[in-house]
Length: 78
Image 1 (tube, rainbow, N blue to C red):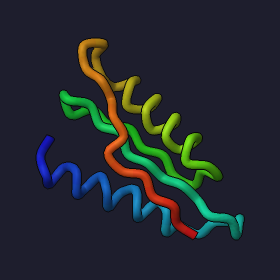
Image 2: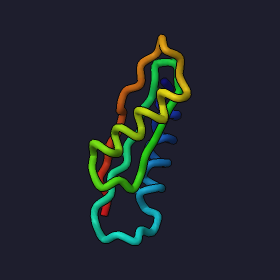
Image 3: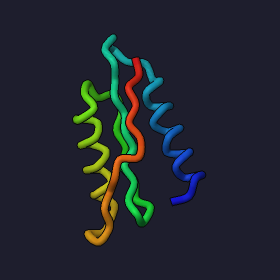
């Protein structure tokens, strides 16, 4: 995967984390990417595990069974 694509995906997650939230709690967001370039992301999750699961599941929906999705970034934002 290109560095530009990773940077764009990182900015997407960070932008989502900056959106106003009704909860004062910390929010987790993650990015998952496959070897073939498919991706999935999550934001505003109460736990890192929940955000990770969502990102991996979204990535898996858009990739073939021959490719594996992996978490490339996970951040907690308040």
